[in-house]
Length: 247
Image (cartoon, rainbow, N blue to C red; front, side, top):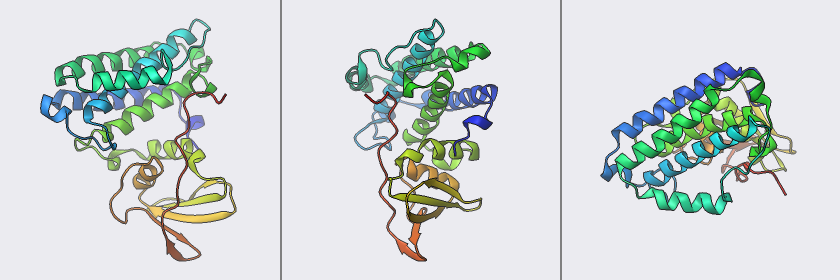
């Protein structure tokens, strides 16, 4: 139930620009002290989040560089081990260093998408065995979600309805095979995810439902589950959809 088919490439590009603008604004406000504070992600400081943003922006720009000449390349240069090592090495940078490095990586990635010709959006890339357009949606998700992960005041309540519906569609693989999640946004129409026989109703604001399925914290009681009219604990969810092709 994703929104990819309903979102034009120009619209997606405008959403990427808006998301990048939000992260850049946070970069300008950071200090050496605040960048070392814990983020909303367990075990990660804000510096770790920023280093990850830098890495994914560079990775997506690299996907486009190769795609435009008819080639495919692994998502991260050196694989996930190199990706993890780079995050740890860059996490402790000063605020000015993050501003320079992350800002430059964002500019390169956004510029790469902005320079695409219409035919380029359908060129194959390694990310999820997809096409450049899939990389655009990934960059949009990464910038929006990790902006809130910084824990500097932006929360999922600022996520747009279009982004939330796209995110829920992308995260449908997190629904365990035995389940169907019947999401009931308040307000909004019912959204069904999964195809299992065990139906669980999950209610809350659309933004909180999206954050919950993304594995992010929500306020106490913001997301509620029930089965057969009785309240039940929120169901477990599966892993984040992998960005690399299955072997």
